Length: 295
Image: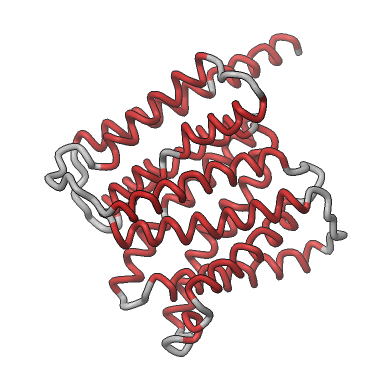
């Protein structure tokens, strides 16, 4: 079980690096549309090569879930990017991270039962940690663009739906096939929204290709593959909690790479998020100990 837990944690950390790379790309003169176009086009090409190398027989088992999952990936990228354009990054991240409790509600409604006390306590700590780590405390601005808030919440709903859908996909379908199918759907949605001309603007330079490559690896390849492997094994509720590793990764990289000022209260929030994730894994640790004793 720990292997699948680590896969989902790694997927969250990988997604957490995107904001840093995107900020660097924008300082180099690239628009949001150009960066997203590079991310999804190059990501699709990489997955196509991996699929051809794997020589796996196509499987359409659970294709309806993969179709919805791909659409959700595209919607998260679109809504979150537009939210960031209208709100401070810290507020947009805070809104995105509402997926923790939204995902829990979705899974509870599906299973028609309330989450256990441990899960509820874990998510509560995650939400408190998210508010602290976002940097919203101490912010002087109190009024924000209503449209930006709606877009941020929509990105959270879509991300929660994506994790939920991943929990319902068949473990028998190879992860590369799942990822290729979903990134294809997401890429079409993103390019349609921002228009394909984003792909051609600037002459497809080497610098654009490099940014697209790193965004694709960390935004489309690693997280989509890792979640396709891990979430069906750990479940949607646990996948939602583990994906919260995205925010600590984003805060850490902002401090180290972008040299942004990160205050003590934000580090306290990161610590609480890690505590919340750890609490969610107490059952897994106990299960492993029981297995060792039984052996």
